[in-house]
Structures are given as structure tokens and as C-alpha cells.
Amino acid sequence: MNSRDISRRQLLKIAVAASVVSAFTPVSTMASSLFSSSVTSDGWGTAYKIIKDIIEPSFLGNDYLVTDYILEGDTDYELAFKKAIQACHNAGGGRVLVPAGEYLTGPIHLLSNVNLHLEKGAVVKFVTDPNRYLPAVKTRWEGMEHMGYSPLIYAYGQSNIAITGEGVLDGQGDNDTWWPWKGPHKEKHWNLIDGEDQKPARIKLMADVEAGVPVGQRMYAEGAYLRPPFIQPYECENVLIQGVTIKDSPFWLVNPVLCKSVTVRGVRFLSHGPNSDGCDPESCDHVLIEDCLFDTGDDCIAIKSGRNADGRRINVPSQNIVIRNCKMREGHGGVVIGSEISGGVNNLYVENCEMDSPYLERAIRIKTNSIRGGLIEKLRYRNINVGKVKNAIVINFYYEEGDAGTFDPTVRDIVIENLNCQEILKRPMNIQGFDRKPINDVHLVNCQFNNAKDSSIVRNINNLTFDDVTINGERVNAKSLMQRS
Image 1 (spheres, rainbow, N blue to C red):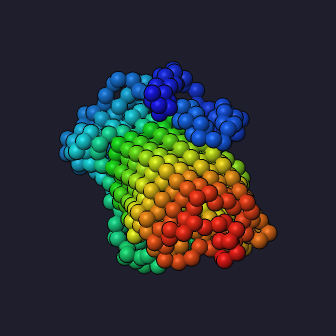
Image 2 (image 1 turned 60 degrees about the vertical axis):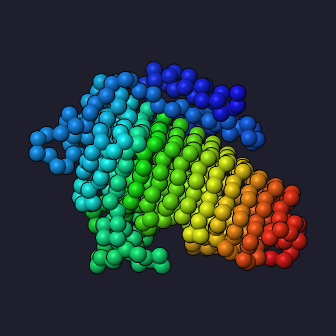
């Protein structure tokens, strides 16, 4: 009997108990919650405790077929989804069942105790008319709160919610819809549309954040061209996303914000648009991401906690996160922290993952700078097999704006064990802190970096240790590597 079996049974018991709890604990009390005080160890036993403490949603056995709510002659099923979800919620919960077939819809808003379940063969396609995602809702975009287009699937302040099944969620983003709003970019494969560019609104929103403009006055929907994320539960608890395929998103694919107890299991993330991050938990507590496949146009997984003044204002870290048994193909990074990381991150555990693609930019990455800052600590990685990758480990304080602010990041207490990289197209390591604020306490154990084309860069780091670390078959010493960088 292994610890995973034990934790599964305990999870089931917790989920059943949770079904009788109707009160929602506001996220603003997160810092004093059970979760924030329950983790005291920094060993791998903590990872299994995190999993045990996550509450998966449970539901009544009632099914509500979305097809029962479709009116004769309808070709757009937004109203049917809304009615089915409302009926399910009003009756105490259950499954809103989507049978095999194709369904066109506008935004779907989930309510407490509802499991949106897509049967095998079900394809839910989302319309690409931006006006359908109005009125504006409270959302986060690149870590900044505002009133913007509704995410394609959205929930605000709900508990006990799920998206499950073997069906497909299709955002219909492509080179002519949604993606052109990114505007000019070095990776551009989308068509540009005159007057439709996110850059002016992005700059203005960043200025509003720094000026402390109230969130309700930050109006960035119609005419702002800030693409909505695909799935965004916001200030929710007990969230499950399992089994579905998510493709062609306007923006980030799965972005839980300020949530507690989030499970993402067996999901296929397939999107190669701009900013097509796969799974981005943001200021979330107790998260499990397992058995997923990522093939994306940006980071596969990126842990976030708000950007700049907004991240510091809300001041909720992402914490107590376990990532395991995932496969990463294309993307800017396999498992990434940042760059919207001003609220910090702690207690991250990553194990038993596979990464392999000549188009995977980095395997393990932390990206921040002196504008974004953040306290980043207690990170554990083990048993990660990498085929091809451009750069294996990147921890860099010079991301995007670089050293242009007064909020130096703190990065410390990182252990990487059993990282095996077969072919590194560029550098094994690019680890650079500030001279005035070095990175602290990074330990590599039994790591192999093979067929590396370029040398590592390791600067401004205190207490870097290697135990059985080889580059191109040669055992390397941490001190000598720093001296050569």
C-alpha cells in the first residue's frame, strides 16, 4: 500500500464530508485559514499532506441534460447551458450532462455544486464574437484585476464545481480570431487587424494598477482587446477539472485565481496561440496538477500570484502545490514560476514529469525582476526526464523589464533531484541573481545534462551545491562552474 493509495481514500472521505458544508470561506481570510497553517515541513512528506488536504468536490446523483433545455430551432446553446446549470444549482447540485454532439455557445458561468460533464464525443465550441462575452466581469489579466470580457467558462465566488468528462472544449482561437489582438510580436503567425491591438490597453491598465485606481473603475472590455482566458474560477473553492481536452484558447487555458483546493487531472492542453499558457494557478492554495498533457504556445504550467502593485496589494501567494506525472511537449517552459509573481510562491513540489520537444524553451524556470519582486521559496523537483530542450534550468532576475525597480525578488531553498536531460540545445543552467540580492540555497542532486551545446551561466548565488551532477558526461563542481561563468 503506497502513500498515493492512502491519500486517495482520505481524499474521498474529505470530499464526502465537504458536501455537507454550504458556507463559503472568503478568500480574504486565506492567510488565517486551515490550509495556510497546516504545512510545517518542507520534505516530500509535505507533498502527500497537501494532496490529502485538498478537498475534491462531490455532487448529488442528479443529471440535467443540456439537450433538454434546447428550444426548437436553436443553433446557439448559450441559453440552454444557462438554464441547465441554474436548474441543477437550484435543486442542490449534480451533473449538467453534455451528450455526444457539437454545441455552439457563448460564455458558460458555473454555479456551486454543479459538475459540467462532457461525454465522449461532445464538442463545445465557443463563439468568437467579443460582444457575446459582455457584460464585463471581475477578472485578472496578466495578474492585474479589472472589469473585462468574461472568460469562456467562468465562476465567481462559487464552491464545489467541476468540469469533467472525455469531451472537447474548443475556444476557436486562430490566426483570424482572438489571436490577432496580441498585435506585432517576434513569434507572430496570426494576421494583424488594423486598430485591434492589446498594447495600448495593456499599458493603460498597468498605469491604473500603479496609480491604485479601484478595480470597479478599471473598465477594459469592449475596445480594449484584452483576450479572455478560457477557464477561470475566481475566488472559488473545491474545484475539479478532469479528463477534458481544451484547445485553441484566446489566451491562458486554465487560470484559477484566489482559489482553494483545486485539482486538475488528466486534461489535454492543446493551443498554439499567443500566450497559450496551459495551467496557471494564481494566488491559489492547495493545488494538484497530475496526469496532464501539455502542447502549448507558451508556458505549459506557470505558477503566478499577481503583478506588481496589484500582487502586493492583494498579497496572496500561490502555495502548497503538487505537480506530478505530467507530460510537456512544446512551450516556453515546462514548469515555470512567474512572471506575475509579486505575491510570492512557496511549497511547490514537482515530480515524475516528462518533457521533450525541440520547441520546448526551458524545463524548469523562474522569471521575475526588480519590478515584480516576490518571495519564492521551498521548491522541490525530482524524477524529471527531459528529452530535447533548449535550456534546462533558468532562474533569472532580468525577465522582461529587467532591473528597473525597487522590489528585489527573494529566491531561496530549492532542491532539484534526479533531473535527467538527454539533449540540451543551448545551456544546462542560466542562474542569475542580483549582485546586491543573490539567489540563496540551491541544491542539485544526481542531475545529468547531456549533449549541451553552450556553457552554463551561474552568477550571484549563495550556497549552490552539486551532488553527482554531470554536464556532457563530466562531473562538475558548483564553485568551479560559478568561477567560469
